[in-house]
Length: 188
Image (cartoon, rainbow, N blue to C red):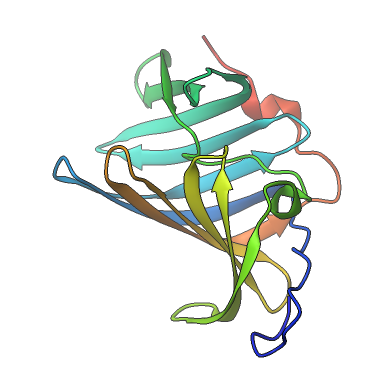
C-alpha cells in the first residue's frame, strides 16, 4: 500500500492465492437483473479453479469454474452441480463471462498493471487500499486490500451488458499450501 498524498506510485501488493471464505455478492444489470448471492468460496491458483457453494429454495448448488478452459471471447467453463437432499446430484455445463469469481495468483495485481487509486473508507472493513485494473484486458475491476494486507472485496463491471457486481469476503481462511484438488472434483 501507500499514502495517497505521496507523489510516488506504490507497487501493487501480493495477494493470497489459496483461500476459502464466506462471501456476499450483489449484482445489477441492464436487463432488470438484481441478484444477491451468499455462500462459501474456495479459490485456488494451484488448481486454477474456483468453487462457489450456495443454497436456494432447498437446493444445494456448487459451481466449479475452470480457468484452464476460457474461450477467445472471454467465457470460461462452469459446471453447476445441483442437489436436492433427496436426489442424486446432477450437473449442468455452461460458459459464463470472466470474472464471475476469479482465481488469482499472488502477483495478479502487478501482472494486470493495477493502479493504486488511493485509500477508501469501507463501511465494513474500515480503511482499505483500492487497486484498479482491466481484468482479461477488458473488464474494469477494483480490488480492495485491508490494512492487514488481506484481499477483502472486489468490484467489476461489464460495459457490454451493463452489469456491475460487488463481492465481499468474510471469515477468510488463507492457506499456506494448495487447497485439496478434491474440492473441485465433479460427481457427474
